[in-house]
Image 1 (cartoon, helix red, strand yellow):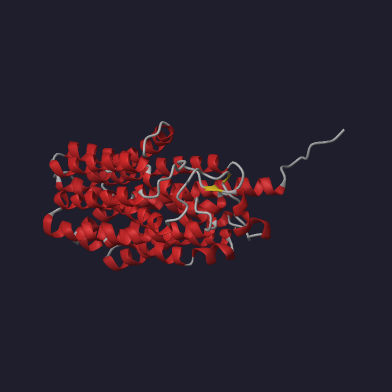
Image 2 (cartoon, helix red, strand yellow):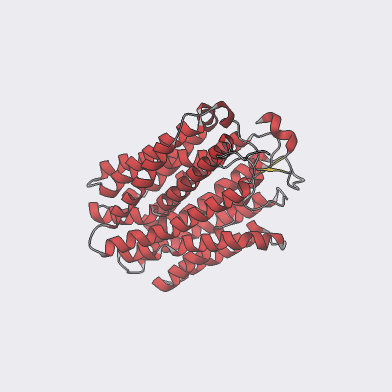
Length: 398
């Protein structure tokens, strides 16, 4: 008679621990990113400066993504756990500084540290979730990130309505980040090679066009972060308070969450995710521009969130489907693309907002959407939402 082992195999334990780490990391990043717009508005009010002067806070995340994406493969080869620990510590310190910053200088330092930390976590989570059943784990992680993204603006607004600046809600992140950093262990050799998420090759007749796929990610993230960064500011233009605007801005992440739940079923029915998403986002943009009503603007943000939802997962799957790029390299390239977008589009929209107001300036997203449809449509692929697909013969390149 064979007695079952009292404890799970070490590798199974490692995978469970890494999955838990990834869930926490994705949840924290979801909260931090969704807090960007509200943090800018509230910090500008508290420090008594124009909102446009703090618009760079979103760029700090972009700077972090570009810096980390540029050396991402090297960082991951040094060890995912080391990258996880460093990212958690940097984001904890940066978020705390932004939460209590009494002046622009402190906000600058906090924003840069938070941007680098969040970028490190974005880079490492796909590696932590790699292996058997990774699709299921990644879906759970996305659900966690979407949930915390919905809660973030509401948390900022609720705290602000009590009379304490809503920025202090960012301190919520410190405890899970400290626990995440403490959970990181020295990397072992058997944990440094990322296994493919699914041992199946997607039907993708156009295997070339890396440049098109990279540009498509830049365009998609550019559109998304225009709404993330300046959605609160647009709500403020309708005449409501900063706290109320920060709370109502949760409409955009709610739209994202609903869209990401619905998108897989629509894709299976043959709906083209990029084209349909671009049309829905354009409708949300036009609603946001057409009226100065807070109710209409809030609804517009939710509609735009529905449209944007499928962009990044689908385009990342397309990049990862390329046969000549390892998962580490593809993750680094996608991180760099996201940073490029975040550094440019929200900054341009903010500059336009200073001279023309955010209401009209949001129209800048329409040509971006048109370019996205044009660029992404040329790849002619059928991506599987939420799955990163790698062929069995690609293992030698990992």
